[in-house]
Length: 90
Image 1 (cartoon, helix red, strand yellow):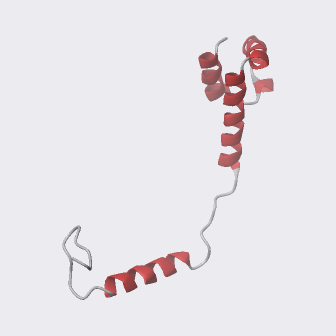
Image 2: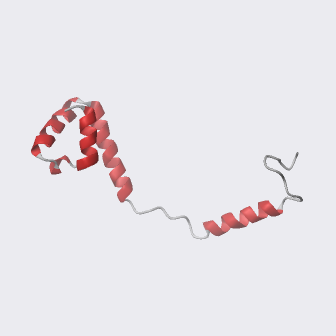
């Protein structure tokens, strides 16, 4: 087994090698014993799986309202409309 095949198997079968069929798991374990690249792929896959399983990150309460308020203030700071690319100093 080479690293490319190992990566494809991780994508198809997941990062838990104990769930792989023996005819795939044994060569994968042998590859892991000698390949830093395969070890890195397996670790990346585990990190990704944990990140995807984590609860979603929520914005603090009121953040959207504060952004809208700040944007409205910025828009209200202009004395006259500007053309695209024009700044207040122009």
